[in-house]
Length: 429
Image 1 (spheres, rainbow, N blue to C red):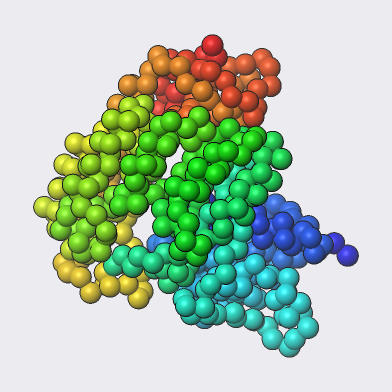
Image 2: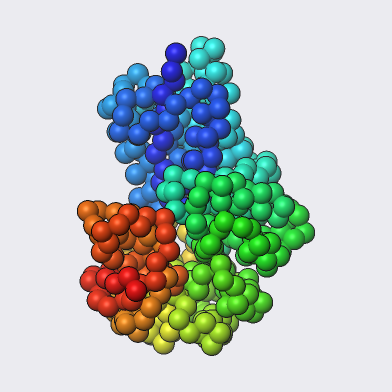
């Protein structure tokens, strides 16, 4: 009898890579993946818990699944499941809640549930018990794959629960990751995004380095593009920047968490760098790779961020030659030291600060696009609607081009010639 399973993923690229790995593992054991919106016997919700909103979205996904099939077995995994297993187990309809350690063993727990008298199975574990590195990569998009190279975090920033949800920093050996990159290449995928929780900390398990990893991946035949998803500024070395500059495969695109442009707030956050170091890294990228895209993460409204300190962040961001911002509004997380920091920032004030940074981000992105106008960039074509094809330049500009031929999963030279909202239009040359 066919066992149908639907998957729903929230949160980061790492979660998406892991969901696909879980689905592939289950397919070997005769589970058939169906769209989440379809009738299924089992629904797997891979959760995020970076904010309270993420928790709410996870609960909403559970309700959606039960509306489709009230008799389905609901399985909840991911960061929310690791941090709040008892809370999730009390949600009506949930049958299995699995910890970070056990989320790749779903068929085992399904059998355990179906052979027992229990209505709910909870698998929980402490952070120190999360030791295994589960290999994961995605194939669903066909042009781009997310390859998990690292998991966990040894940093304990005052506002963050990720080290509690993901465990210690760990990784697979470089040789194993190179083999996975070759498997991805065999599926005619052109681009790999390297993902993890703190990828610059790569090597804690194997005494290797992230720089050594990218050197070896650069040699894999069949992969034409790599992107580094996000890397801490204190771990972004000169040799990595220079390697990206000289590589034909590693794209001129860096995503670097700042979180606050105030040294006082960075200290409260327990970040491991200063605004001076951050500026130095941005300028170093600009010197070596002037056309590089540089994205920056910022959090607004953390405890201790006064109006004056927020304006320090705002002013600091205006001085940087960057390309876009990812803005996060602080959300209280149980078990974090930030709860003990004062003064608190009201939710209304957090939203106001977020709006200001979104306006600044739009200006920053517009300036970046304007600087790239009339340049010729390689675009990996990913999707199609009628005769309009969409992809990303090497320096991460979403671009639309017209073609009467099917050019999906090809790299085209494109002259960028017109900006429209959050993307550009171009002509194939």
